[in-house]
Length: 173
Length: 350
Image (cartoon, rainbow over the protein chains, first blue to last red):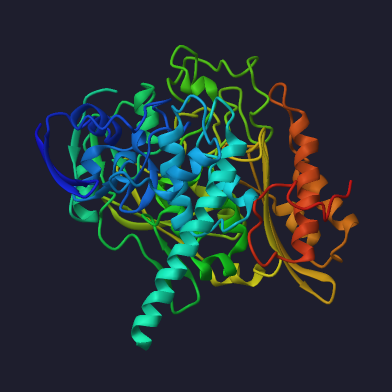
């Protein structure tokens, strides 16, 4: 059985012919695109290491078939920085020691980017912890992770506001 | 995972036709089915991918006041729909207390209804399990069974239904709209899930090839929005299945309860509607003595199926807490820790 599918991965259109419908989105990313930043932890939807954004929403890439996502836009950890400029969430994880061994970190960061864009947690540490409960960290870096997400949330909100302000200024001019 | 054919039909009629083949299973988000397939518990020979069927991802208010929720609406989208969360707060809170944000972003309304039990012996293919392999016995009896059922169980199966969402759906008289070979039919949520009896392999009233296309909430469900809560006790405060959960809704006029809705999760193979407790609450003053009487009535028929007698006392306490919190008024916003009894000490009475 050959299934042709097209995905946009980190901004680039990619065409595949799946010779086996069992390929998960995670395995497609890791084994066929060599995008190994997305980790296979439990492979059963319990640890969150495989978190990616599909059409802007964070999901567990291990629990979904690649075939189901024909036409989708996928963002992985490899696609979040702009060249040498880290994504604000990446920078905040470094600033706040949001990791030790680093294995869960790509999933944590993708999940945090999703959380911030969902806009439900705001600057409440309790809501941030709850919103990231699908990402396990066996090193126990949770305190640093929460601090990092709080700071990134603040920076991203501020830069969004300042972009809005500058647009207003342009219109006024 | 076993090999299977993958088909993606263009409409409901084609999907139903494709799923009549023996061994076929519907695939929506797959958050439960793919997990079961990876473990070798489910071995469908054909997956009918319904995740893109048109028209099933809408939330619609019907002219008669009912709310119709398409089966492909994602759990997170429903819970975060501000009109929905305001009108049906206990249902939104239940949704947000389930699984993780990633899973709620993927999982669908229809899939949530038809997820399988999380009994460890069902998941372990080396164990005897009448639900997975009929006639092999039940290793949960006499095994590690503190999470198992205390109501409606049989000698053949003591598993519980894992859904949070279904508990308030049952409390508020939701109906499932089902499409099958013979056309469309409706089943009350309360009748959708089956008790095990002598055929625990059958979880639901669905016939082979039938597809849930929508869940409908009657207009009456809106009357409870000022006094509705969902509470859930877990082994950890987030991302865990319920030991015991309670959906409670009240209509209070002049300090008296006009009508009550009460259902329990984590205690049986189906969400457990507590009709006798509701009857006791109707007409009573909204105060602790009535809540305690209702809690007692709800668990009258309960008995341990193993090391889980604690659930019977726990369920009564959570019923009293849920009714107390519901009576004190639905919070303006769903708490930071949805459904957690630790979110608020208000109502912490014995």
